[in-house]
Image 1 (cartoon, rainbow, N blue to C red):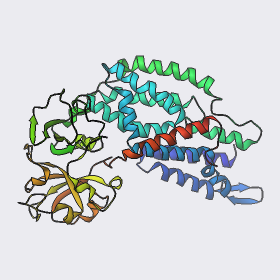
Image 2 (tube, rainbow, N blue to C red; image 1 turned 180 degrees about the vertical axis):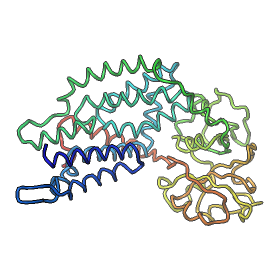
Image 3 (cartoon, one colour; image 1 turned 180 degrees about the horizontal axis):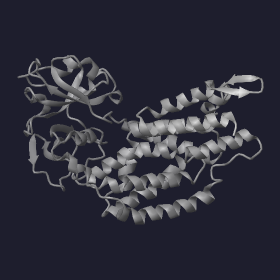
Image 4 (cartoon, rainbow, N blue to C red; image 1 turned 60 degrees about the horizontal axis):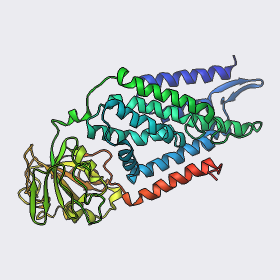
Amino acid sequence: MGAEAVIVLAVIAIVLVLFTLTRIAADALLVGALVVLLISPVPAATGWRMGVLNVTEAFSGFSSPGVLTVAVLFAVTAGLRQTGAIDWVAQTALGRPASVRSAIARVVFPAVPISAFLNNTAVVAMLVPAINDWARRLRLPVSKLMLPFNYATVLGGTCTLIGTSTNLVVSGLVLSSGKLAPLSLFDITWIGLPVAIVGTLFVWLAGPVLLPDRGSPSSQLREAREYMAEMIVPPGSPLVGKTIEEAGLRHLPGAFVAEIERDGESLVAVEPEQRLKANDRLVLVGVVESIRDLQQLRGLVPATDQVFKLDSPRYRRRLFEAVVSNTCPLVGKTIRDGRFRNRYNAVVLAVARNGERLRGKIGDIVLQPGDTLLIEAGPSFAVQQRDSRDFFLISGVEQSTPRRHERAAVALAILAGMVLAAAVGVNMLV
């Protein structure tokens, strides 16, 4: 075994150990390993030379068609996520299963064809939040869904050339050899498809038996802080004419529709069969995760028009939780009279007060010390208010950027065009 092989094996072993025993980021470790291979002294016939790899060899991977294709796929999946297209597809395809086995079937069988045409790593990153939200909404055990979904995406990735980065790397090596014909999109399907079918059937049949049931995510929300929020069904909304059940507002985890204000009247004890009308004002009570989901639901808009008057575009904003301090100048004033938007360049979407059920419109609530506000603002809000004495605590809400639903059709069209181009052999990277 030559010195170069020894150095390479040693670097791989050290990287694996560091992966296991430290929290150093994977990209930092891999770049560090690349640097070591670039500068390690290696014995040569005329003495010593520097580097197991030369500069061209070290950076050739960054120009690999496989790597660039994966980067493009991540950009496409990010567009699907930010426009809400993936949430709509997930909710439409997954529906309301009658059992855990049926839920696994609805997760794994669509995952195979999806991951056949999208990189499986990107598919997992894109769909895991949607599946988690879906399971939380229906009180399904996530522990029985995630592993089957992961295996299904791996199996689906073996069906086409672009399904997984491994296939793309091999394709790049075939092209660089110059001795073999390039692989087409479906050259490996005749092997990958039977494997995917058998593997997916096994996961579907064995999953409910072998996987543990660690309970529904909704069980973690029982003691969480409850907010009161208001949403409006605008004219032209796809929810107009649907019942509370059909609109997906009946089985919200940790949230419920407490009241509907319609034509100056209040409808309390809202029934699942109650149909929504244009300009209905929904008063909802729920935990922050459910209020966040409602803010992103297509067909509902915040009841306050203040969100449309902020400086930054909505798709660049996010949600924050802020606790009102006893020195806040707005204490004892309503949110409207305190001119919250003008003072902080932010809008209050919901208020929580020690489990108390608040009534009235958001703008008419008189703030008290200790009130927790759910705020929509630009991404710099937390930094700007970090040293402010107006709030005790400010924390961001994960994955709370408003969806750009009007761009969903564009994102789906780009995905369809990318898959069609790959199928007919068009190089997307030209």
